[in-house]
Image 1 (cartoon, rainbow, N blue to C red):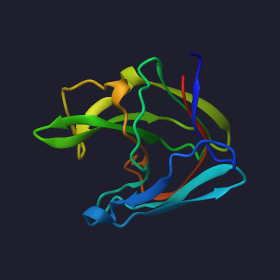
Image 2 (spheres, rainbow, N blue to C red; image 1 turned 135 degrees about the horizontal axis):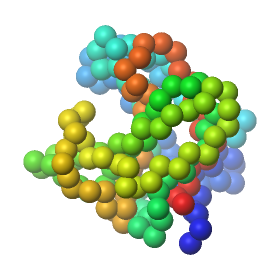
Image 3 (spheres, rainbow, N blue to C red; image 1 turned 180 degrees about the vertical axis):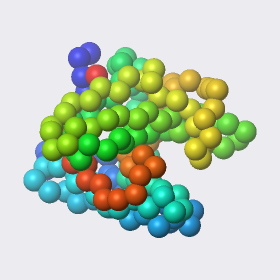
Length: 165
């Protein structure tokens, strides 16, 4: 298996059905959202670190076994800020759902294909880094994309495609 297209923002491409979740769920003041424009998901807004300090978009729940792949490849055109890709599985810590986070850098106004190996995803619960469990790529149930680089100001990331590689 070479690679598997997971999301492309064209009428014939697979879709993961994204929705918005900003830090106002915890009293924050960041704003963000997305639109689909010219076959790209345009994720943009303004982060405000006086509060939660993040904006995110997430997929609806699904079930994917990606254990035959090495990681996630995102094709983006962004603003030079750091972003975070998040994966959820059925993994729990003290009975609570955890996420796996990996940061990636972007180059301003440049289309980049960024490989994020599954081995780089670290378990966390609401910002608390955990020692384990390690990511089980056979039980992926959700993706999320965060702007959470602890910087105030506007952001724009154009997500062109998401693949397993």
